[in-house]
Image 1: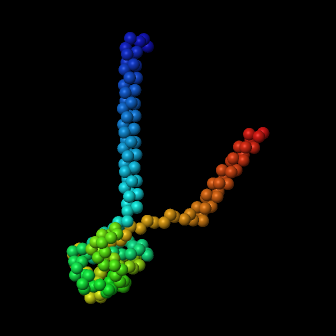
Image 2 (image 1 turned 135 degrees about the vertical axis):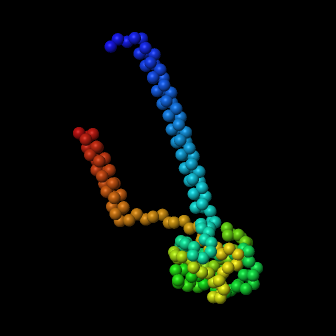
Length: 192
């Protein structure tokens, strides 16, 4: 087929357009990658701040609130609106916490302290937090805690690093043996 003289300009314009599209794609991809990197950096910084923060990890309001507890971590009930009444009436008494129809008894650890991450107006009491549904909190076994907004606060707890299982250790050992065998094979071939 005979070229009428249009092939070269068309080919050049096609190549130019393709180069422009590729350049735009590179800019878009690099902008998207930059945005993804930035968002990951921000998310990482925020999550590390959350992990490092001594503040509470959850704020559960009212009755029938689902919560997750960690054994050995103190519970705190924040009752700022009526701290004076609580200090006067309930100092030295016990809390009864009903979780999944089981009643747990615990006592005050400290009332109305102003230092620490919880801040002033916080009643902290020791206990063994469990997983379940919080049904009721009573003071002194008599009155339900309805003073202000009832809030059960759980401290931030960082999970321990996972320990590899036996099968994971076996896979690690197998990987080391295979890598060592491959290195020996390569060394023998080079020696020959």
